[in-house]
Amino acid sequence: MATTSAPEAAVGTHDTFPINGTDYIEFFVGNARQSSMFYRAAFGFQLIGYRGPETGVRDRASYLLQQDKIRMVLTSPLGPDGFIAEHVRKHGDGVRDLAFWVDDARDAWTKAVERGATSVQEPQVHTDEHGEVVIAAIATYGDTIHSIVERRNYHGLFLPGFVPVSSQFQSSPIGLKYVDHCVGNVELGRMNEWVSFYERVLGFHNLLTFDDKDISTEYSALMSKVMSNGNGRIKFPINEPASGKKKSQIEEYLDFYGGPGVQHIAVATDDIISTVSALQARGVEFLRTPTTYYLELQDRVGAIDEPLEELERLGILVDRDDEGYLLQIFTRPVQDRPTLFFEIIQRKGAKGFGKGNFKALFESIEREQELRGNL
Image (cartoon, rainbow, N blue to C red):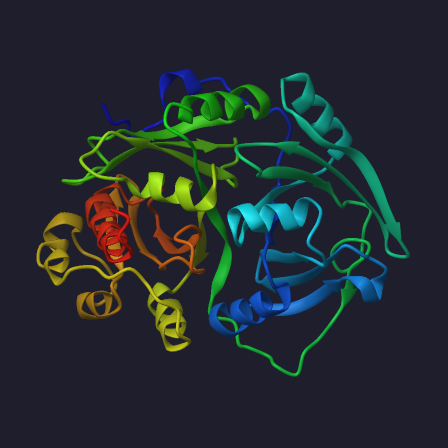
């Protein structure tokens, strides 16, 4: 039974603490300098900050990238030992931290721990000449964490320890605006456990539910529940595999990532045709959609503003709900392990996640799996 609206159980829920939005996303990667160049050249991010040996940090190097409201931190270990090196060895390049921006980190951390969160870091105060930032952290699925960041008394670049940097290479932005949602993959039978975690610990509600009847093909299936905070600025779909004839994309991810983790990051744009055209021109590869998808597209979604031939040329998908429509497209994995990828999404009123596109999307993923010999 698929649910297309908030379940009754969500009525009356409220956030454990206010979250203003996504503060940053930190990736642990094998070579942060080179990853920085990739995201700048291909995705249009600007390099604005750095932390490493030259700034007094001895165990890691971190590059701060920004585009509009999106901040990404790329961090590499400087040696073979320690938790950063172990994370990269086990997972490859992947997301370590989905950080929350809050007004009171001490209060938020205390309430989360009281409600059953596992503490990764008690509130710590970091200072420099620009003020102070308070940071705490709690654990979520796999080796992923949520840092809780309070920066109301800070007027510097990003965090103490980071210094401004510039580069002779300046890539032009491509219209990426903010993080729309982040999707996590967990093991079979554990989706509801993490749904309960976000409900119990953070006061999130189950915005949407999709079962294996909604997200399935001839060969594989998955189940998903979308968790959201009260203001809707944080949305975390959580996937688990379901029984199918062959290995699902979630199982492939878990095998290659070495456990649960962030499967993809959806970033919003106001002009998906322009953004995707720029990404393709810069070498970003996307999952391809069969031309048959577009034959009945307008019958399914009705009138849209964008030229159908342009959507077909670029492989952009369209879906409609009661409040409008959305356009979306998914990259291939951005590293050799078939794990993390990105979604580009433009919302024109729609609040959903492209339910009508699931079959076409997962058939595209299965074609990729088959090429890799992992279906």
